[in-house]
Image (cartoon, rainbow, N blue to C red; front, side, top):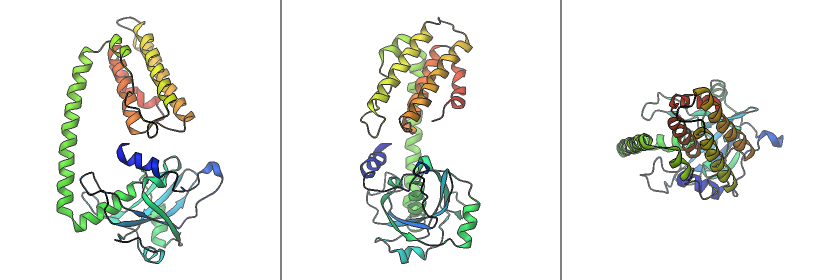
Amino acid sequence: MFKALVDRMLRRSEIKALPGPSQGVEAPTGDIYRFRTAPFNEFGPPDTGRYAAIKVLRVDTDQFVVAVLDGVWTTPPSFEEVSRADVLMETRFGFDGSPAVFGVFRTWWDLADLQDVTLLGAKPLTLAEQRFAAELNAYTTLNNANYAAEGEWRWKHDRQALEAEVAENAKREAAKREAAELRYRTRLSKLTWDQLLSETPFERWAPSPPFPPEVFTLEARRTIHEACVTLRDLGPKPKKAAVRVVLRQVVEWFNKADRDAGEVIETEEREDICAVLEEMAFVARQKSLVDEVDAWREW
């Protein structure tokens, strides 16, 4: 979530996204959108001063196929300027020159993932664009367009600084993971049901937005605490099957609650829920059940 998601929430009322299937309307293939690029990582200045563009190559029942166009402009480009651009080929870091074409599921589609989006117009697909759309094999969120456009520009014009930033970020993230794993191992070795019940699950889920609605969070906390009581009452060495039933009920509660709330569980929420489930499985002495959670969850 972080600042980008906060920005996305603030911009949502200003940007009209492509209609979803529930509205019974399709966005035309060939639509071209201009957007202002965001920094490739947090080390860059907040305003890049650059613009890029995307083109819709295909519209299916459950997805949009998008191409990033090969062009970065220092002022907002016109439709004529953008429409002359071919599809961007990605060569930064480990990319092999493949086209910057990817699918975005309708449930993920949100133009507010990009900055200052403007619909410029539409242009028929070229034969190459039709082929790229047919050969699609990657799915991601729309902000991948920013990473492609800004990343490729910096790879060509500011490579040394970009490589240094990525290396520094990787080093810092590795240190954070190592510290988190150490703290987590220390916590697990001493964790009890009484401690879990004395804590407030998902304490960082505020404010809303960008985090889930307060009623969702309160119900999630109640569900976790009730499950902890149930598991505690199974005794000090509960059977694996009994623990599995309780943990699966919790996951299925989150599945339904997430659907009812409009799919509010994103990366941070998913990580927090899985962490709590792992703790519950560990205290119940059935930590291997954590490996089954992915098969149960829909978020």
